[in-house]
Length: 304
Length: 239
Image (tube, each protein chain N blue to C red):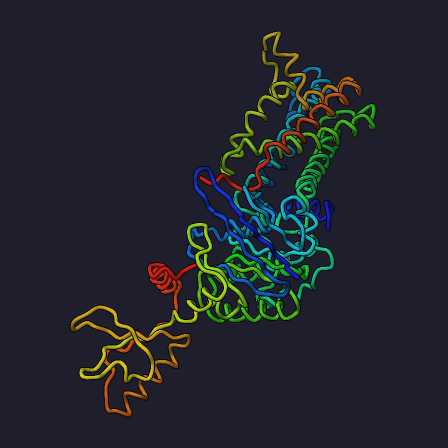
């Protein structure tokens, strides 16, 4: 069944079109990532889906209901982690969770919520003393208090250290395994790749790549680059490469989903021939790489 | 999970905020108790003046503890995006606002009762002759002024300015109720000032006019609810 349905959604702020004709669907129990840079329209889309704003055009449905008109009914079954929202700074973490439990029908026990967010050790700390990442974790704890069927996560791991990010990913994957539908926005390609079973890339209010296209691009956006040793025929390399620049600065670039593995393969190949791969660089995929690829694909007329 | 939850939250936050307590409890109670106590000792007809002063000072308590306090609390929670977060829960807008309004009204009633007992003890002001009417006027006035304070946040552009924006309301309410001493006012202004909800409460406590109070409170409740519905902002202005 379809948990979230968005059709030709439009929203402007004054003359600025924040979202232009966006359509997508999220199946029940699926993790769907909206990937994009700041200002792409991700937050506006999430806020409309969560019932904070009314769409200017198009239709949105969450669990078969209009999230703006039927906000009360939709809220009983959804959890929302906003990109930006305040806490009561003088309450402790535990007090905050307790206050929110008071607002929630059949809430998770406090310790379970704190455990989920990895905040057990911070229970007695005032919210004003938390780091940005810890506040994000508390945000997550509050969003899942009511065991929602649909969870909206707007930039859930921004400001988190790598360990907290991993933990959050585990939590989100765990919830999805239990049947929770998750819509998340992120500008970390890695996050979308790790979590999402489907994704769409947004730019300037539009979806510029979706489905297989987005996945293919994101899967190839990791890269290994090096200076090709003189006299080596690129066709003899164990992995396909393209070339950046020209003349002496000419570098071979290998695209790969797992750039570490690709680098290893290339080095092993070079060692077996007594060659040296000078200036080897391994880079995990970034959103900017993906946009470069997208632009290239678009120039060839292959995008969308 | 309801208005009771936001009521409890509002009450808890009220008593936790030590700096705000000075403004919303110490100052108004100090005025409402101190001025009658002073009158008692400097005026020849001490108890009569003290009683009149205490009745006028109820307008100050309503303007500060109810109106100003809720306006400051809600506009700062709005600007800190706490109201937005509350809206991300399954609470309805009415539960969020009315729970807070009821909480502020309760604190205001408590402050007025404390002041009433204090002036009885310190200034010999007799307890209200009609306790039921007094209670009705104080409860209705506290609710209406809290409601209007919540609605007034729409006019407050930034939370830092909340106290500055509510000061004129406090001054007008005080002058209208005679709490600022005898100030000569033009004839046409008097009936206008009598329409203020604070004036209606003070007048009812003074004269026992229950009907005038009821009509006035009903009208201002309607004004407050309509204003909330039309203009209340849940998020800071984006600009």
